Amino acid sequence: MKYKVLLMGNNKMVINEFFTYMDLNFECFSTSDRYDDIINHVKYIQPDVLVYCLYGENPDDLKRFVNVENKISVEKIPIVIVGDAEECDQFIRIASAMDVTIFRRPLSSQKLEEGLIKLLKEKRPEGAREKRSVTVTESTLKTEDVMRVAEELLAQLAKEEEKEKKQREEAARKRHILIVDDDSSVLKLLKGYLVERYDVATAISGKIALKFLEAKKTDMVLLDYEMPEENGATVLAKIRENPALQNLPVVFLTGVTDRKKIMEVLAMKPQGYLTKPIDMEKLSSTIKGVLR
Image (cartoon, rainbow, N blue to C red; front, side, top):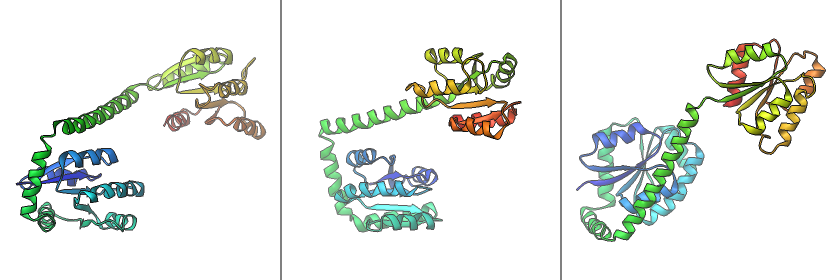
């Protein structure tokens, strides 16, 4: 009879070793670090041990795990921590009150497997395992409970897939930039430079730019500071007054070199400003920084 092992943590290499090299003695399952996910897996799978494979977890991750341990301890499921010396020491500092068994890496798959089997035999003698297996068999007859937990897990997976899909679509979409300048040659130059990497629109006045923003969405605005009728300062003020646009990133383009004038530009709190003639490399790095 195999032991059921529930695996979690950032160390995918160690988790993969369980599935690849330890399948003779262990029936392996994996879970995310979300509380509901872990609790549902524990309830549905009823593992013999939970193994937390550490790799770069931050203190907040470990603090959240303390809440999980409170629930798992009720089920009398042993908790094993696998990590290097620094990771294990950090875990001990944060969760010193937890009853866990620690295996420090470097450690071969064989030694880890032997250590877990020894631990499980001590924690759960063979007779206890057989008795527990009867409980599992009886619980599987409660179809409504099993189906409910399964539906919860499937719903959670569906949410994760939808989130990942949106992230992929967002990554694949070209980010949109609106360039506003009363000089058509500047518009042509900047659009020609950016159009391969971004979806670019242009406006030759502040009034046209504001009309554009009322009807369409953009990811950022490159805004000329000195324009007739409505200058850049006026346009930015109107953008900030609009609740739908108040968080829209704006970078000023300005030919002003006077220190006092530059301070006036910065007082408007744009996300950046670039002096003319525009340094294309600086333009590129500014856009990347703002859109990140």
